[in-house]
Length: 211
Image (cartoon, rainbow, N blue to C red; front, side, top):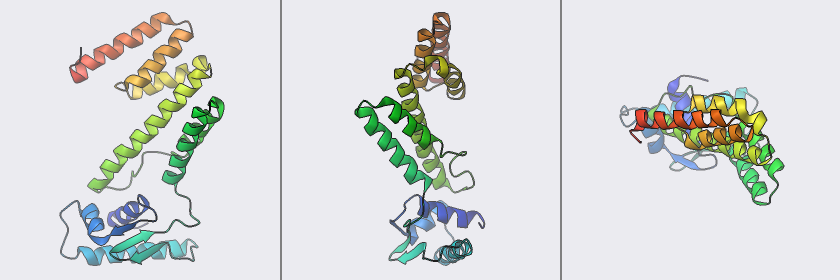
């Protein structure tokens, strides 16, 4: 993979698979609203370089197609983690609605297993920051759903360590803290549950001014 502009163009296309992303939109995303006069030419150069990367990787078919007014990433036989993640989460929610809690929890686990680190960690354009927040929120929601399902399955003892680490990492996530308190209570650790509540209240006052 090439430099930051090339990575930004690829990220923008991958975030909208099988949808046309206009050249104007790519210019806006890559240069964060302050493009050079050669912006359109540079985007075309980035796309050409990306096509070479895919060909070198053994992709014989056209992966990035030119479609007016811009380009489209054709997923076809390719697998995108973002698409697979969303599909598994939806499947998990459907299983939960049917009362199949174990199957739902397994699907959430499979979805979360696709994460290998922070999203878009090597993309520096401003648009990536918004997408990172969106993707991270989707991940956290899936984690919370998995925790809720596993609590319903009676895994409160096994979840204590995971939930404690999650609350320490995200102390302002009230739902996660509530799950930790519930796991502690069900495990016979009522004093710890009360302390977890007190810590949350104190953090809310200090960080958000909520009493």
